[in-house]
Image (cartoon, rainbow, N blue to C red):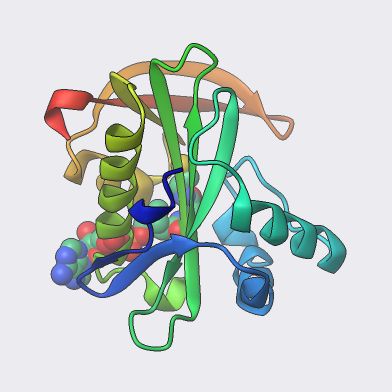
Length: 178
Ligand SMILES: CC(C)(COP(=O)(O)OP(=O)(O)OC[C@H]1O[C@@H](n2cnc3c(N)ncnc32)[C@H](O)[C@@H]1OP(=O)(O)O)[C@@H](O)C(=O)NCCC(=O)NCCS
């Protein structure tokens, strides 16, 4: 029902549905250890990646209690350079965002623009009153991106992630500040 909302073009990139044809690019950057260091996902086998991309190419925008993953692509070639996950809480009031960009596309402002497009999409298509971005306190590029988009830190909590004690920062962006 929300398919007319994608793709969304922005300066330097495109936010669009993930596709099966993205599997090579997706697998290459998702295998880079530094990119996954603070993330909830782990590298996938070839079969898992194909199944995931196929599922995400037609997953609903947006279903309560579900993540949907979208692609960030180069504007001319349409080659995949990253992805953004969007989550809608069970009660539909809160969103969450997660983001990954391959190293060669980083430090150009593309990730921030893509996340901004994704947030506009989430706010337009759902009734969420705020969106959360949860990040490790050591993940400075992620914190800089969230703060650049207007997110404010609302909580710091001590957690154990992959067997390691660490500090997690919860950032929030209210609907009216997006
Ligand atoms: C988090 C992540 C997406 C940020 O990528 P990024 O490219 O640094 O983010 P931005 O799009 O905000 O780009 C900002 C950088 O580009 C630079 N830049 C260059 N040209 C720019 C422009 N026209 N506009 C904005 N920034 C620009 C900025 O100076 C900034 O550099 P700085 O971080 O040294 O200050 C990336 O580091 C990543 O994929 N990390 C691994 C995955 C991860 O941990 N994700 C978060 C999980 S919660």
